[in-house]
Structure formats: structure tokens, C-alpha cells
Amino acid sequence: MSGLRDARRIIEVSGIPLEVVVIGEGRPLLFLHGSEGVDATTDRHLLELARHFRVIAPWHPGFGFKPRSSELCDVSDLAYLYLDLAEQLGLDRAVLVGASFGGWIAAEILVRNTRAFAHVVLSAPLGIKIRGREDRDIADFFAMTEDEFCEIAYADPGKGRKDLHNLDDEELAAHFRSRETLAFYSWRPYMHNPQLRRWLHRIALPTLLMAGAQDRFVFDGYYAAYQASLPRSILTTIDQAGHFPHVEQPEQFAAHVVAHYHSTSFADAA
Image 1 (cartoon, rainbow, N blue to C red):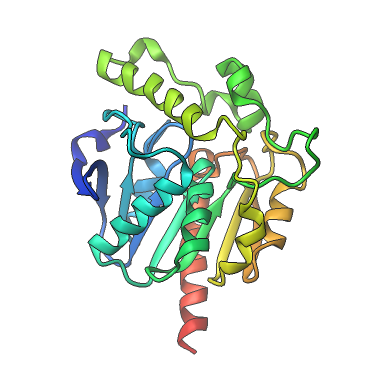
Image 2 (cartoon, helix red, strand yellow):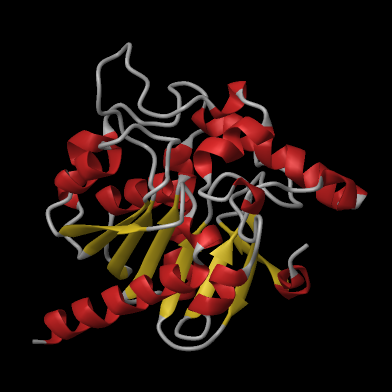
């Protein structure tokens, strides 16, 4: 398991305890994780980002070692919770990075309020509906075995597999708690907010979308449609990566985040 376990701390936000890792120095970067946790299945992306930023990486309530709060009912609640976190930490012109499910949360944050952030990276974000009612945009994660999911979500399926036999009792409970929490937030409607796409035009910040070239978890064209809804966005594709580029290609992932930050910082200062 990740060596970051010893770096966890608890920050109480609006009466809700958040498990958070804070590492590195420099411009603050809020990293919102995907389907399991900050460091699933590796922490390499955080360590790479921490070479350039002060990385603030919370576990969404109900993921990791803490139970889900009964006060949080949907993804919009998570968005408001992180807006409160940003205000509490005094974030200013920070970088917001969301991966997969975390990309959905990031988009929900930004259509509400962009004040704390100046740069956005959405890596394989979920959260919107593109095609018709009977057309599945996103594969049914909950109907698959782990092997089936890894086959469509990773260029190298081995990078997504977790050996549950090597987890201690606390880690095993966290694994299944995370799955349960993901289902709670994303089951109905499945992995999207029907209204979110309508309001993406409100995100006027420079936004980088990243997609893995071998991502088969979403239909071909999903990220291009996402990018088309964002007024100041570009889309880049990472080879030898599926739905989780930060896991499979952490160095490239971090390099794209850094390059986006520097390019938009220069443009905004001009």
C-alpha cells in the first residue's frame, strides 16, 4: 500500500472530518481522486505533482478509512464541501485537478464558483450525458468483475488490479467502503448529472482535458464532447493509458499539469 498512509491528517470542514494528504511546496493544487482513493492503485502521480506544487489530496467522505457522512447526499454536496475546504485553507489562484469521478466533482465545483482557482485539469472526467437515453456513454462499472473493468479501463490491465490478499483488515474495509460510496453517489442516474453539461459554459478558466488513448470505459467521442462544452479548454491524449492516465503514466500526467500551469500563468500575466 501507499507510503502516504503515514502522511494522512484530518481536517474538519463544515463539521465533516476529511482525510487529507498534504505534500510538497509551491502553488496549491487540489487533487480530487477517482473511483477508490487518493493513492489507488499507486501514489506516484502525487509524488510527481509534489515536485512542483503543494498538493492537497482529500479522500472523498466515505472513501478510505472514514465512513460516509449522512449529511452528504449527492455529488453537489461534495462540490460545496470542497468549496468550503478551499475557503478554509485560503486557496487563491490554485490548480484544481480532478480524475474520473473526481473530474465530475471538479466540474460541479466550478460551475458554482471559480474564485479559489485559476487553472483546471480534468483527467478522463465523468459527469455528463452525451448520447440518447438508451445509449450508454459510460460502461457499467458495477456490473463487471474487476478483471473485466481493468481490461477496458487500462492500457495495461495489470496496473489496475489490486491484490486483496495483501491488504490488512482496515485496508480491505476501506476498499469495499469506497466501492459502496461510489455506488451511493453515482448509481442513479449512472455516473452523471443530467443538468451539468448545460452549465459547463460557466467554467471560463483555462482548462486542460486529458484522455488516455486506450480508454474504453467511455464511448469514443465522450471527451471531445466534454471539451466542446468548455469555453477555454484543450484536449490532449496520452498514449499507453486508459481511463486513469495519472496511474499508468504518472510522469507524463504530471508534466502535462505543469506545462498547462506555466502556459496559462504566462498568458494570464500578460
